[in-house]
Image (cartoon, rainbow, N blue to C red):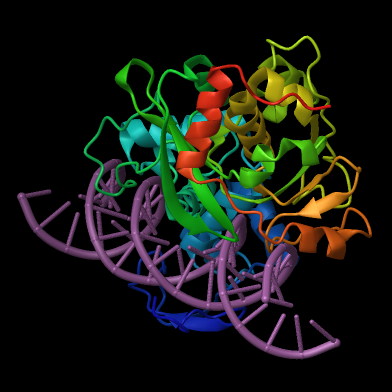
Length: 368
DNA sequence: AACTACCGCAACCGCAAGCGC
DNA sequence: TGCGCTTGCGGTTGCGGTAGT
């Protein structure tokens, strides 16, 4: 259909010979969004006659819709046991797996996802995957690679985000840092890990840069994540868990005193923000890379968020990162703190390597 | 408050396969 | 076997809501 051609709630003439148009010569048929009254008519018809002879709906009822439109409406919206709402983590993973195996066979995928329609799956793929691709994120999980010559599918991954567990297991074996194109408001530095020769990279933000190298200024770290596209497989297992803090603490398994986690999933900005608060002093003494390579990305992934935008300093005042505005100011000291932080920069790959090296040598500064 | 950009989803289209005559 | 009709599938469009400026 050409742009602007789509009719909304209007009627159009469909030739009797058109696909699904039915017989009987020119008939004025309605197009556009369905009304509740039309839904009732169609539902009653299907309950009475069954899911067949869609062209007869228009003939034998007051509905002025073509058979194809009726079938689509019933299949995608009216039939029983339809599952509405967003896809669960498991469903998303299954879609990725099936797409990798079979390509864009939406109807086939729908048979594997009870209650889901091919149209919904197709919409999911077309929107989310494009978003991930725009963000240079790999579409497929590391353990799922396309097994078909899928010309319709996404291109080869440029950056593959590593599941937090994988990153934790392989942390320190090999680090490679590369700067990626800035996305949204943020600068992005991605870290890659190479377990068993398989390159897995984790794109996320390290806005703490010089902050971490001036650790005496910072005592507590409060993090507010901005919106970000994150593939479901990059999310940690606690996505569907009511207790994300357990995962965070388990990520700090080497710590006797895991940093506290204060999620706010039901707060004012529940949809767009997730707060993480941790004790930087203990964190840095334990595992700085665990914080930046596992916990923060995991939190970002779990809440579909990306970059932290502010933190709490040693005076328990909140500070912004460069030019990044939180949706909700944490306190009244913002202007002053922003001035103080005017020179704060994002950490360069070389700087981060330096920090990691220092960490591995065990000489990170001890915070008071 | 107004405007713009973006995103998700519903619904359209063309095409092809299936089926009966 | 060929034809016409029906059904199903995958690609695409554009509306409406929302976030951002």
